[in-house]
Length: 133
Image (cartoon, rainbow, N blue to C red; front, side, top):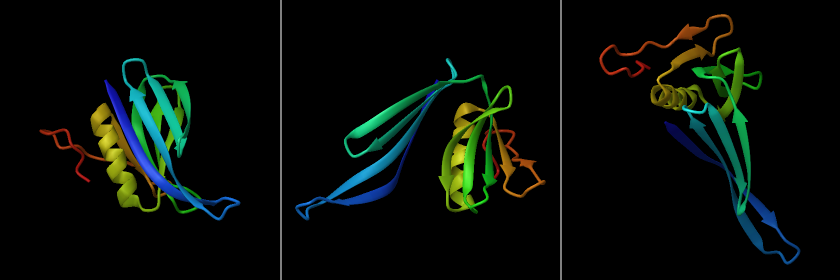
């Protein structure tokens, strides 16, 4: 199964010597392949892009936590204590919505690690399998 995630996060304004303005859209795409355990990051700015492929062990869970800059990060944890940074959000609601979607699509657990020392697994509905957050 493949899961694709696309976020458009920043508009950059560039001025040339001729005082013309160009607007470039900066995007980050993450593609997850559960069959091969491959993670593909594609970074794009305007027409330019770079693709980074990473081979991983089987996916275990998604963790949402608050970093030192008071932003909320979502990481994909794999077997062997290896993790991959997926995205950073300004508020917890966006981070949990994103984490919930990915965890449900990959059928893995979701960990709330936003409060230091008080990690909690999010509960799923027994019938639908959806998270209760």
